Image 1: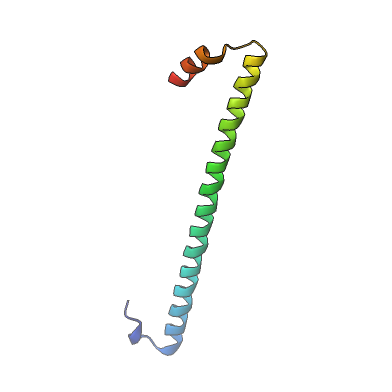
Image 2: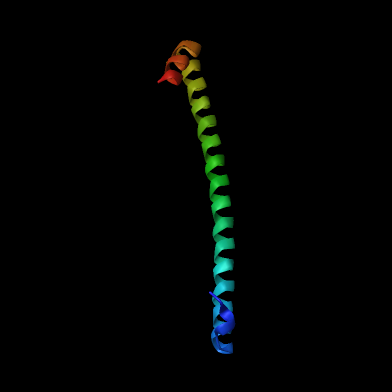
Length: 75
């Protein structure tokens, strides 16, 4: 929209709205980046936990080391 045709008060309001929208976009992008990082971090922790549980199951004799892990990874 061409804001040159607006009266000064309307132009100030338009500029304030644009600035607010820009700030909201920046905050949303920062939040999205943070959430993506935390989700990736959580995925890594879950993978580590799964590995530790599998190792404990092997140590307890509940699961054989390589054979069942290969079968599980193929499923």
